[in-house]
Length: 134
Image 1 (cartoon, helix red, strand yellow):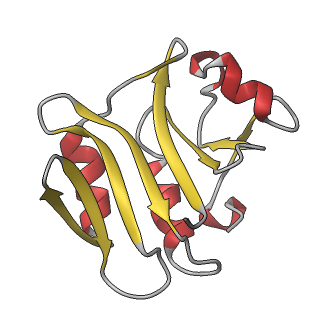
Image 2 (image 1 turned 30 degrees about the vertical axis):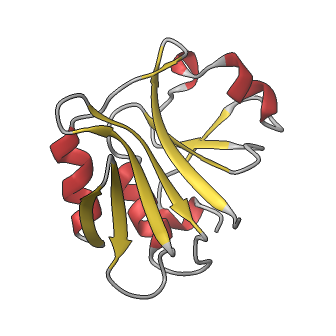
Image 3 (image 1 turned 45 degrees about the horizontal axis):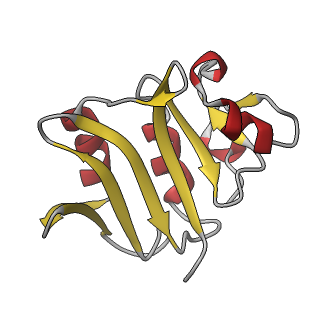
């Protein structure tokens, strides 16, 4: 098992759904999105992203999460993550959740357990892809 990073949307402490088409259109600029058995997978279109991504949700409900397996440091993944953070309510955290990043204040919508794991116990607002540590 490798390292993973995640984006997720929350509302009032619970997972919530972003519009499927909005999330998938961003992902498709960086690779392909395919339905494999009962899950949705993201396959990067080159180097500098990740090994594979997994998308939570469905076309009917929307997307609640995106996970990237074995993320690449210093590559294009920070740009992709920054774009996905532009989807209303999305936040980013790494596997051990010591920090949460967002492009707007999503703190009131996060689960207490996620905030409790953060070192500063607050959301860090990012202004560019360079603010995303990978």
